[in-house]
Image 1 (tube, rainbow, N blue to C red):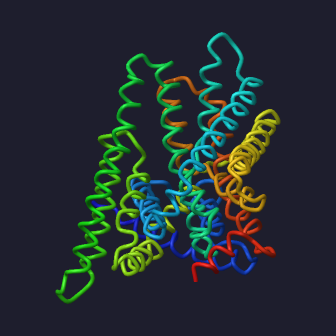
Image 2 (image 1 turned 30 degrees about the vertical axis):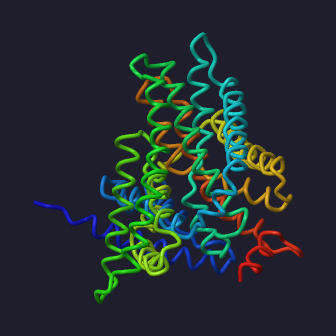
Image 3 (image 1 turned 135 degrees about the vertical axis):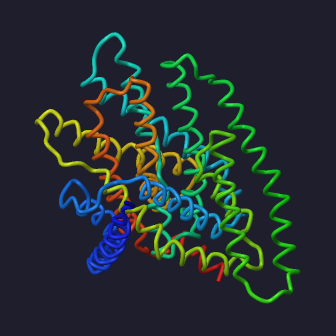
Length: 399
């Protein structure tokens, strides 16, 4: 007999994320923090009312795809292009600093002739950036289109690619079946594909939106959303690039067209009603009941500190080198802190290869939860307007 318990699970997630979202907003924190806390409370770590499932996992994956599609819709291609080279510098330092510090921390706990590969893998995990939390927080604060907001989005996309490269190289060192050269070639081909398909389909969508005289607008949002899912599938399946990168490119292609505002509004409704709450709660649901020794507690504390400081210092320093202001650099660094599901995917790969020590698994999971919860709180603090703030002055100039 079929089980319908998933209906209750989703209802609890929606009610819990909304209730805690309202509560955290009362405390002047972003609503997304409440959604994350709701997932921890409802999941195995505390009440155990909702268990992780394949359905929740699939919905959460669609959730982050929709978030990145929406981010692409609201991003100016011109502004993103201006941030391109600067974003590369930010992303490179935002990968190298966590990689080095993560390896250093792991070296104190994992020693031996072959320990270096597992330690390096922990560094790779800490290079990850999950921009979904940041995107939702920036939207909530009306800061998506600021100079620092565009830099965060551009750097996060590049960070994702660099993370794939790092993961591929380390996996290749541990597994001779991995062809590092082929993976790197596919990444390059994806960006060639994205540019070509972007130029062509942007013109196609623009022409269709301008010349379609039939009544009703629903088809615009349906076809646009289907296009985002197809791009997400193609990027992951054929090029080995994260699906969220494909969906972000899809949003960029449609951005600037005459019906972009309508599509953005409808996608926002879809996100708000179901899949985004499930995505945020799913991170908390992964947390299991905790029972640690003093040694593990120290490791958790070290990982959380390194995860926080390494991105703020690495990305912030990169932003300063690219002549962003101090306030913008701090915002960019804080916006790159969240590790989210990206770090968990990398950790799973390490465990599958048998090179990631099980001793690190729970600390990494808690570190992911910590960075996911702390990121929107940090953004709320650093995006407080200050006199002559270049981010918000830019927005005023745009009108």
